[in-house]
Length: 73
Image: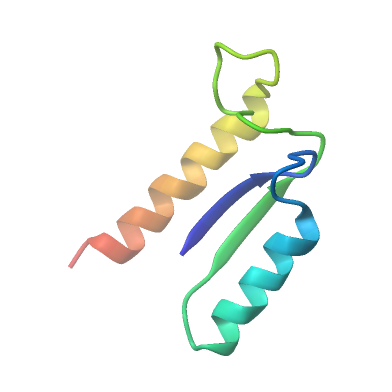
């Protein structure tokens, strides 16, 4: 599981993300969570005022790498 989160997203606080990641790992699952400081909800959407280009670019790169790692034979 690849998780991309904004630190300031009020819907999913960092403590919940960290708890979820720990639970997945305890179950023997692959879990890669990334929390971006200063980023809120929809930080990767350039149409929103919450857009954070550096975080969005990094999130895209991490997601692409994760998919390449786990979807390629």
